[in-house]
Length: 328
Image (cartoon, rainbow, N blue to C red; front, side, top):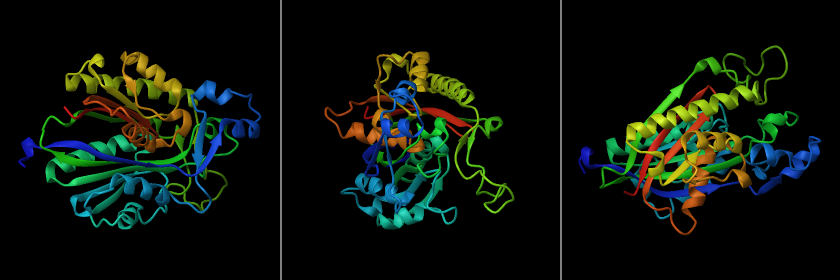
């Protein structure tokens, strides 16, 4: 199929969450919070935590296997793993995941924080259009071991989980990405992070602490996320020639319900279906978007064809939006 005639389709989906479900009541009791406090401020009712013997790959592999069910491994030319919590700092986890899935294609980790899936989707779609090969995009995070158990801001939000989408070439060039807006601002580099473990502050550097995720200024993160997601989504819609009322669905990164509600109101998305799984699965960073997408695609009635808006904001800070044409 000539490049100009090649679109990109969401071909199949997968997801996986650990068995252990952690309801709000458990965390509220440990942090001496009033009953209902977490739900009122985040929209989250429960989340899942990995078992002590599970690593990131143990979440990513079953999600990928679900998306690859019935697929010839030879079709897949690339695996992109969006994660901030790999099995090891070196080597990358993606080659191990590919091997366990029976793939011998290219495989690379993509560290895009909460915006990782959006970036991987955009890059994966470009690879499909250029090569005609399928691309498996997996986003997975195991955040329960990286949060400070005593820090309320992160403890109540973050979770473990994985989602996957298989991208395939389509004979309809209108299918797939219609626009993509990716942005960053390193001035907010230290708003959310895990200080130790890199070359700037190795594990064995003098001093203590810095091994857990910290959110330095939650209000500033909230404001930056709302502003960045709103502006990038507005630009993506304009570049695609799509009005908010024309959208079939909206797939935002699910950090917390207040951010989603504010961005949705800013964009006038009140009548658009929101693809979300925040209430029962919490914030698993990059994994929230494909997890919600896989859960929705597994329900009846099927998601109808039409344009889908994707929005995300993550540590770094990085953010963006895209319009994806799902089955014209």
